[in-house]
Image (cartoon, rainbow, N blue to C red; front, side, top):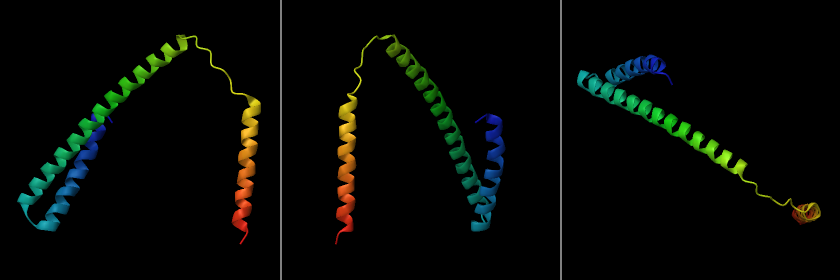
Length: 106
């Protein structure tokens, strides 16, 4: 989030926090403390989001480097046996049918 948008959001949020605190407590001291606490929380959230974006961009760069490394490796991977996969699927399908029938019987 750009700083300009953050500042545009921060103003109305702090004003509404100040109004709510004033109508709830009728104390200017409480309004000042609440507004400062809200401002501090918003700034901490903004700082944390910037750190998260920096961390995520670094993670993406490292993932790209790992992908390039794995692409350069010439490892042969065997394909699964199609008959074994088909037989396993048929067994699962038959088991599911038996389970459905057993649920229907009293």
